[in-house]
Image (cartoon, rainbow, N blue to C red; front, top):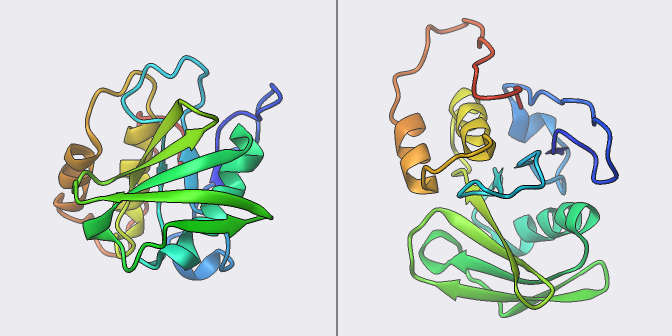
Length: 178
């Protein structure tokens, strides 16, 4: 499921809210992804991704498929080696080879390369994150003009006290809900 806020061909795409039980409610093989809605790319992050696990071979293909549909063919994906289980050097996704780079950087991001030198940075929300914290963190990451690093967004949201049990999640002013 993507929530890009605007279609790549212009015009508004419908906003889609992620259900509280999102990892169970969304079909396997679907990327939980949110992209910045402006073409200016002035923010520190271009989007946010919420994988279900740390299994690269299971989680990356749906992400690559979704991003290819929106951005065009991708050539490389850079991952934090300390955050993922076994990272191969390449994957074949939709009959295209995508090279994987891994570095022990601990920066809570995935770096996507389109073409030779066009990079997109996505914040990675840890798989076990509570849905409310994930929604808020993802909205902050794609907020136009964001200058906060992924690690700082995640630290702020993942260590915030939870709301009352059974309560509803109010829409925040960080942008549309996920």
